[in-house]
Image 1 (cartoon, one colour):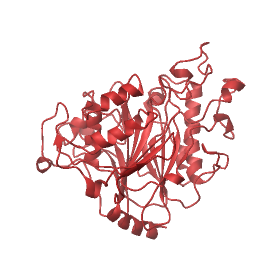
Image 2 (image 1 turned 30 degrees about the vertical axis):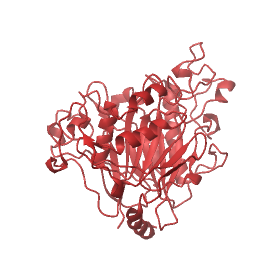
Image 3 (image 1 turned 180 degrees about the horizontal axis):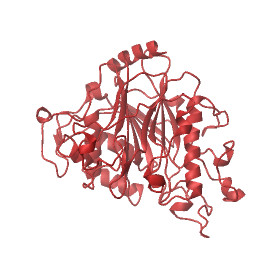
Length: 431
């Protein structure tokens, strides 16, 4: 598989983004759009301007000592938790219009510095017309920020998540129905915590599968606490707190697509036993989906099962909710044993790309693989990019420059516009 997959990646990079300029909607609930050429030959360089609060710099003046150049023929997959949300999806969309949203501009510059071919963006509000994801692509990612080169992702996929959808039941047991904790996934409004996938490669939209509606009670040997929920509540409570997506990315010249398995765990502040149990079962769901052991798992169209053996895939997104991490013993990310035990997935263990040795940094207590800062200065690993064990990985890393290094302004914890998460990436070998 490696030989065939490698050759197709080389060919794929030569033709990525060659589709015509048009848009297609796969259904009323999801969108996969083609809006121009990809990063390799469709980058925007004519128009750039400083991110608010940052001085204008030019590409020639930058020393990219905290990034890694992708080898020819490789495909870079990245994820970043953005947390771009507001009081409603309409408010988020209104603030994004015009290309001047400070958080979105810092996010876009972070992406442009690292230049992934496929980006899984979590923590992005969802709206029913999919305009938020389109606006982020058209008005931020494709426009060069602070001297960077814009990336026009020619394919975008987004769909509803369970965040903020009213369950009609008293899930938190407070005697009242309604509110963020009674939603199918914690949230103040439908889609508050959504996702979007941006790709320079075509998405096989007819083969996309979503698992938003799979019920927690339908997982065999699930961890749902006994007597915690009524029969009515069990009948409406899905396992995914947001959703699980299987997005096949087309690599021209190769029959096997690369399946991007995207998800985002989302829990209420100060999770209780049911929330932790739900997170553990969501991780198990991902593990069994990619290993082919999910015979019980049905998608939103009613089809059963997971990936076939030998399918190339990359799991990307948030696999441990920040609130869960806040209350975990010693604030350490829980071991994702269910994802790694059977050998289907490998963990490249991406670490901070930095010239300054980690022990000499002010944030020396942080895990070098950390992707999310916590209150009090600690940081934990919550976002992951995990490839199939059969894939060769050239390199991986976490964009986490030290103070004084290139890009620190994009991750500075003192800057309210910096993303709450850090971008983590890996390069699948193409030659």
